[in-house]
Amino acid sequence: MLSTRTLLHRDGLELSAVACSHRHGRGACEQHSGGYALVFIRRGRFVRAADGVASLLDPSVAYCMNPGEEQRYDHLDDAGDDCTSLFIDAEVLAGIWGGELGLPQGALQTSPAIDLAHRLLLRRAALSDQDELLEQALMLAAATLALSDPHRVHAGRPSTTRARRALADGARELLAADPQRSLGELAGALSVSPHHLSRVFREGTGHTISRHRMRLRVRAALERLADGERDLARLSAELGFADQSHLCRVMRDETGHTPAALRSILA
Image (tube, rainbow, N blue to C red; front, side, top):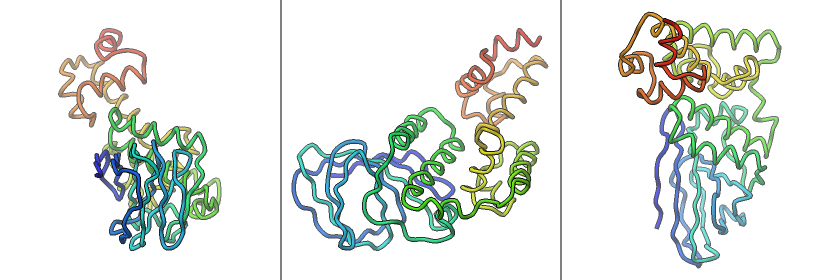
């Protein structure tokens, strides 16, 4: 009765699109055997009872799941529902949620901006590289949990402008040496959580780490094209693009020109 399509599974996050075809009726009580999760409803309505708290769930809200919860799902019509689940490892969650575990019970009223970000995340899963998708998923999780307790979400931030600038510069330095380093590797090298590194970097530079990494790859590609490189498949593989079409799309987005046009311009 459940159909799950995994879109991302790395560095402590798992993003999945879930379709449920249960008909109207009361569900069975069961223990949640998975990990910590945020769930966004795209279509449909149902009631979830978890540890004695019942919540009406529809596309205007999100809800959380904690390991070991006793839960029951009661479906209100025969049309089923579609959801997006974001499972978060304990270590990653602690970095988002003020160093603590245990997600809030009940429904979280989501803003139109968060709902749009959630739906764009699904769209990006088909178009973006995994680094960008991971960072966007972290941002969505933090923004959604901040609806419940913004102070806990912001608890791990560096306390001074100088410290935040140093952290962003440290990430830029590591990426300049090796653009292939993942968000998790950067955070480990700088002794911070991936969430806080992503947030501070975005505040300090005006763009995400994944966008900065992609811009470094574009610069390297421009240098190779200026030297006469003609094999775009080899260029994309060596510089870390998903494939040749990904290279062409990113180059066009960043410069307004295709690689072939850039080769002519630079030559």
